[in-house]
Image (cartoon, rainbow, N blue to C red; front, top):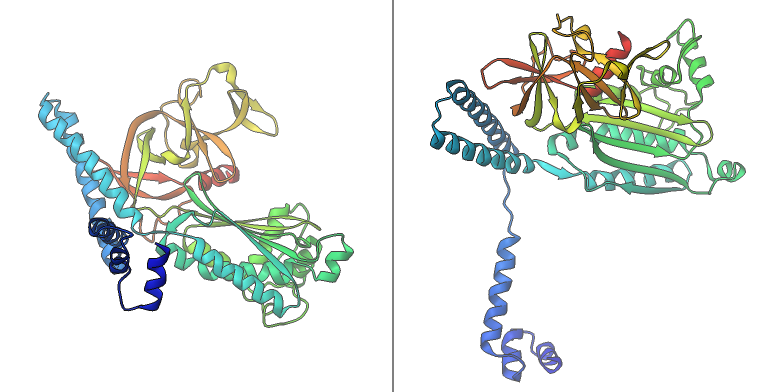
Length: 431
């Protein structure tokens, strides 16, 4: 073999296989087998460019197929004809449709890795411009997201990275005086939770200055009274139009444009942004977006005469509690003891002004639902079953309903509302 490689080096125009055969290192049959395997590998790795609009059309048509299949299943259930062949064929259709849906949806999904790498380069570039030293760590960069959303979230991420490096991190001298490493840390993290795609951008800098934010808010007449404001309410002020606490204008910050653009862009994608900050330890921006899959697995529940759909990815369990498990605690509200854990109770009928069939939790059904950062029990009257449903927009007039992420056409042709768990939790806390 070694002699063959040397011969190849002296005669580059001769193929390696021919050289090895000539040297007696391999047989012609072995070379043919190797070439065949190589060709198979090339075939396996081949790709093709496809217009994303064609992928969108494919996903839309698969969605229509899922709706039609649900209607066929509903008709068969209503007829109860006992036609086993028909039932078996429809069951096979369901499996094929499900596989087709998963494949078509995955075609639009790409890892967030490339975007994270661009953010890491940006952080290093910005740190050089402002005279700081930064280290960037990434976690969950292989987490996948719809390609359209990856493009849409790029600009908000840019603003947050700039803010973290310029506002969040201290200079090397300041960090050393505080007993911190000379190099500031920026962390990028991505993961799926509760039916959401979550991105966290963290720094280990100085943290948000609440006093400075409040002073700026008072000076700009954003608020007249600052008493009783929670930390979250204070932090959210940085998302107000034109709000900036920068003491001087630079190429990076201080122009009063940035964080309000972040909030608007995220809300446009039906997302939410939260801030966690500790003075002297750093700040974390947490953005949550609903997974924009056209088709989801859902549990259909009934509240009064209305039907809702809960994403199965957000459901932990369903139960009917005992009377003893229910509590109404002063200062905490209604709770239910679920396996030793007191969980807040959310009466869905109250939030949407529906006449319920059951008011007492022990007569109804409770569904333990995980939001982005917490869990609660939803009180419903009945569980109808599970189904694949196609997410449909509710239109401009209804798209901003709190706690609802969209609608879906059910098997009987009626409309069901898809619940956004985190949005529903926030609505329950305001009511």
